[in-house]
Length: 106
Length: 122
Image 1: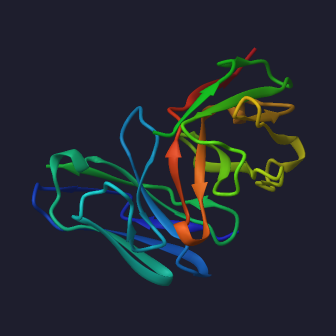
Image 2: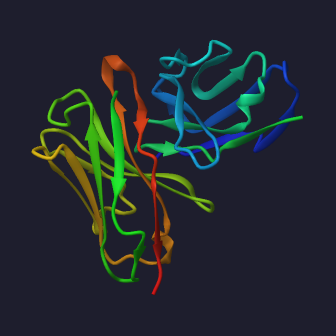
């Protein structure tokens, strides 16, 4: 199975900052990668699918890119409601999730 | 509006069988448009995909759980279910059911249930 790592494990940023999270796959894969946001006590919510397609209803400040083994999630202008844990997840080989990146608002 | 709702016991005795059901409303599971999955989450291991079922009855399981796992569906009730045998404390987790898109609709778990916490303890 493809293993996913994420960096950083956590970050603290200010409202309005541009934030980027990296997801690295243990081997090359297709674009079948999704990004999720999870807030405490809630299930994950899909933000991006197929590496770069914004899910329905998700604000345009979220974007995804990447290919091969390296993928990124970018928040162009961080908002208070973006405080959450973010996960990448792949559909190439089994369906594995990254360990998560926790974003705190300064 | 499609909704998924997990149900089942919150406490299971070690070595016994964990049984959960996911009731789907607002959509039929008896079409080929989606896969229907179980996913669990623990503080230690994070999010772990368990397995899915397709409307045809086809299943696909996480190899780490395959020997203990059965996922089935009841189309008359628009439900799908999970049975995990010989549970241990390591199976203690929040269990989610989720709808998975694929192909032209893109790959994602696009709708999730609220989750149900299952504790394995005597």
